[in-house]
Figure (tube, one colour):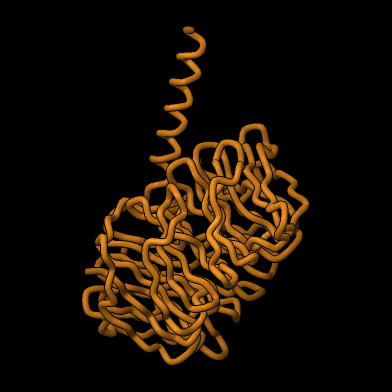
Length: 373
């Protein structure tokens, strides 16, 4: 009996750790997936009923997911512009233009202090003042940047298609170090315990020390991976192009479980959200999957009727995601039942950002949408 009670207590504590790590700050969504652990979850409450509050037409396609900080929205555009909008009204605060052919693709802005950082497809990492939209510095990688920057230990960390994870001084733009992998670094780095975790295109989950850029360890997955790792406790969760979702024990450096849909064999490009003991992510099988975080057992699926590359965001027991058919959908986290839907009219590959009672998402026809009450 005593052993059974101890196990139950440990299970409850593990669940509490999962919940606490998964939650992001309530008033800001300052980076891709909302927090350095990339959990896609926020404590910010959204109204029970959402309505469209404003739109902004950027003019060209948007794959970049928004960041929200200090009452402002930041998003990158294929036009090569990083734009800042007022969260309350949608009015343009400023535009920052990259040089040359520096379109901004999937790289999503990250806000820290008085600066916002974003990468472009020419391989430049930009640091821009949040108040005036003026360049503070720029740093050149040797390949395009599709990963989103993250800030930790006074450094900006970003992956590049030059095969490296770069660490740059956040104030000066000087390179601190770069770590070379065996393939493009597409995924955004998840941060925990002084380590940057990258689920690489070279079939490895690597743990890189933020202090000096040395590899602490690597776990071979054998799978090409575009999704970013979501971290909770000592476990990393991510999907692969081999049609699987993996849970990697970071202490034992091995897989706890792997999930594969028994009928539909399609890659996972969407990054996972971690909430309520569940791993929730979209698939190119046109489904949203909810898996048990401990066992990998499928709990529910939702048919989106189009592929889901958008990474889900979770707030108040609801899962929000976009799809290639232009539908922004809200599901009940527990059951997977559809609660709400909005037709954007163009593909939504960017991921939702949630802060201060607002949800922001952008579309491939260049429209930024803001919902609230």
